[in-house]
Image (cartoon, rainbow, N blue to C red; front, side, top):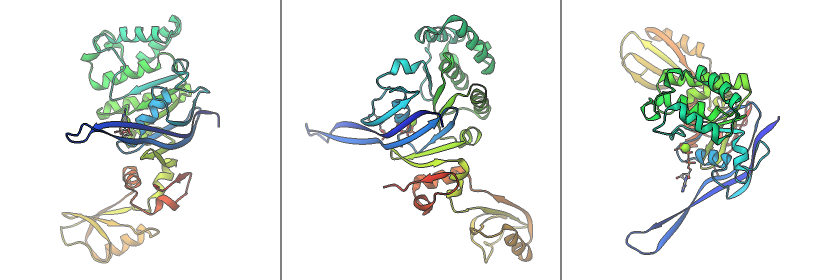
Length: 334
Ligand SMILES: Nc1ncnc2c1ncn2[C@@H]1O[C@H](COP(=O)(O)OP(=O)(O)OP(=O)(O)O)[C@@H](O)[C@H]1O
Ligand SMILES: [Mg+2]
């Protein structure tokens, strides 16, 4: 693997000073936002970076750009040390923070892009080429003269993406790029990112709470919790961590008490949800139910990735420590 991003035992500690009650004494608390993180990302990978609120995702991204200096450990991005070689690195990297625009609020998009051209010293011909391409792909043509503050969230996000890519970075960090967007805007952005990776081989690290982003884009996921890596592997690997919690959804002719002899996990009128025991065949279960109940319709629900991640965060199932299954590894919270 041609490694472009590498973290070795990276930690980041923040100190918070605060007064306790009316006392004049200040107390300090330290937060270990990132706590001994090691991973490597290869050229052209699209990696989903997941974790609950406060897990340390944005802190990681900020260290990768050089905005924050790690408290300990080593970071290498494109062969450079981000905090020491931030300006050089900035030419190789694009960043989008979904929660905060990098565009100038009062300027039309076009002027923001021009400012970025100067900041990154992009040669005019290359800039013109990139701008044309990005405007077409992100459908920004009719928005170029509009001040950023008048753009909708989805339009602004497309503007931010273009801004991050005008200088052709080989690496793109996206911190919640689809936050707050409607389904159509999300789809447009996902499609764009997929194409960017396919056509240009751009390496993408994608922080998101939207598992649709991950399912659509990422061949690898890392789950971080309390600043530590809780999982690193394929989406299927992540799914397989959860003991097969497949569920049979049964529509009966009429509402009734929970069916007997099976584990009913939920009842809603004539619809009942039945846990399919690990290793059991759904067909046998179906045959059994059909023999005793007036079943009108059936379907099997696979465990959603959302459920899997939720359980990983909660640390609430035994698989986390032991399971080192298909293409993934998980480590228990210490
Ligand atoms: N500048 C700071 N000063 C003090 N504490 C901070 C600072 N930045 C982050 N933290 C703390 O570090 C921890 C990790 O924060 P971070 O923003 O990296 O989380 P996150 O995974 O991005 O969460 P979210 O999903 O909510 O965006 C949190 O406990 C946060 O309060
Ligand atoms: Mg964050």
